[in-house]
Image 1: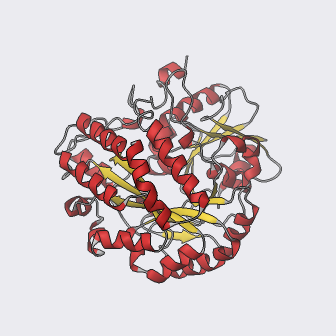
Image 2: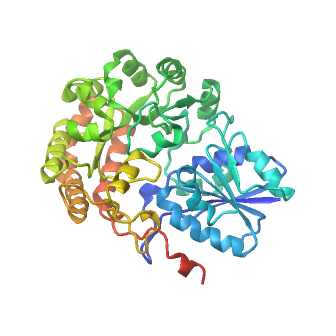
Image 3: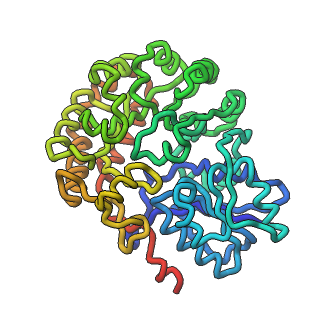
Length: 446
């Protein structure tokens, strides 16, 4: 039996290529390939960079689905099913919205695949498969099989993705990860993580966790071991890391040079609404930011707009805050109401969702607002995000922040990353806006 793995893309304007900033190596596919028994043939097609042909020889098609790629995933699934292929779907969106995927898949997997994947394939092989399987959170799978996309490696950014664990102990109401894992965090064995790092081709690493120090004793042990490997790495963390000077020191010593922090908002009322009020109680925000910077770690600051106390002035305040601290890069994102989250259910009950299943809405475009904000219109929210993002990534801003970068780190690799990321955002800051999310299912069926 032959398995075809498919990673759906979001979409693209006619005649245009996908944006390079999206082309990270697909770690999920490498993990699934590792879990697949050796007796099965396997092929991988990445919809972001190549044509996905429904006539590709295979018996079953495994499609991993995120909310933004759901529409495209369903289009591809319909094409494969017309060819008599068995379609398997899993991923965050499928777990949070299984009835959505069930319309287009023969097999739906809820949760993680580690404990059940081989069994699902065996059931398909002998013709006894079920429409629904449930997996548990068990991120122990040894080393991912990166050979599944080795022939395409040159097309991905030269960054090695490593999964340390899954989940987050925080319960932010807008976050699909929190809903998916129920506020829990489980990590992989440190020996597996270290062994995987040693096998990777690229020496810049992205630890893909949402909050790597949810288990602090584990994080301390991990950083101690990673320090022996002489690598450069980045990850996502929450601001409370600034309260642990020893952990900051260990992170820096182990090679951490950049962290993505989801500030989300600097308005305590918004933080209260999203159940992230603890972020406002950590202490004086400017002091916490400077503590991280003084430890020699740069910050990729992420903000989310569209909560009930956001107005036009909110954007200007965040921009001033970001300029003051000269963050490495900044994301001005609009709120996304992901299905399965408390924010989605609240907005739905209040009648504020413009489309209940916005991810399948005809002609839906990247950057389109799917709900009614309280103090600005959907169009104003979209425009304000774009305007302030452009201002942060003007050439004047990029050059103006450069001396501060030199004072924080002398590592040439990080200076190169600064230029690469900031210029990428400068030239592509608006190019994602207006990209169609998938095609129409009716068109895909023709």
